[in-house]
Length: 367
Image (cartoon, rainbow, N blue to C red; front, side, top):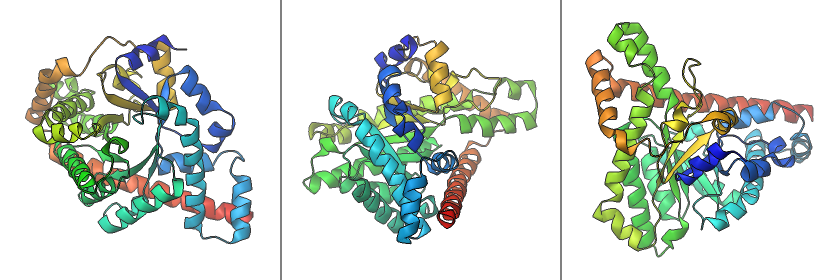
């Protein structure tokens, strides 16, 4: 067992794996990671499923059955993905039970083609909640403008939500407002708030990738000095915003009614630039009450050589503000950056979803 990951967990960071596959489940690999590397949750997205379907023979038997039944490609994709999510939820159920439902969570995303359609997203969230039928599920809803009311509605019905694709501080505040409104409606509906969980997935490395490219174009020494600093600074300021919200009377009233906080989740924590330390977004984003969802490569790196040295978020708020101010002074348009990242994020997941549909369609035709 990794001492580094134990220190990370002891510091209050929940370690979730940003990957799932039938092969990982049937070999017992996920159970091993829970036991040996402190993994306490799993996240998925269309890209992850598209990759899993393209490798090995783990899905062949189910695909043959689906082909015999003559189901549509969309129905086949949902049958395949929810099968894996149910299985992973069952593997993680002991973690869910031992943490009173806080961890042991598995996330599945709504069809990303619905990201700009509120009513369709709500209907899809309900369908996934019913299909998976596990209390430790998170339904992932993107933090688009159209996704915000869907987040509120899903939570109001008792559906636990992982809000994904958050890049901007302003949008994150809107997400937290949608979360609070959902819990308030759930309370008014007579639901048990302690059973409704939510996380807010704030993306990190993609922010650096986009801003670094713009800094390279500017090319001044001052600009180049700021490379690799925006992602962490942005996330640290997101945590500052979280602290403001959970100190508000509005949240305190919900907590008194049994609600749990919507934990910040650091997503996109695999380092994209090989010049940066491969544990950058692990070591620099440590504080109590957050989630870090890691690709397995990042998890292994953290287990091997991450240096965990206490809280690396709350003591550095001023430094984070200074970084953002310097970026603005250098000519970085933050609002444009986060707009581009959201649009690209939705498009990338939609592309992966279409690739997944094409892969399953081809497999059904062969079966």
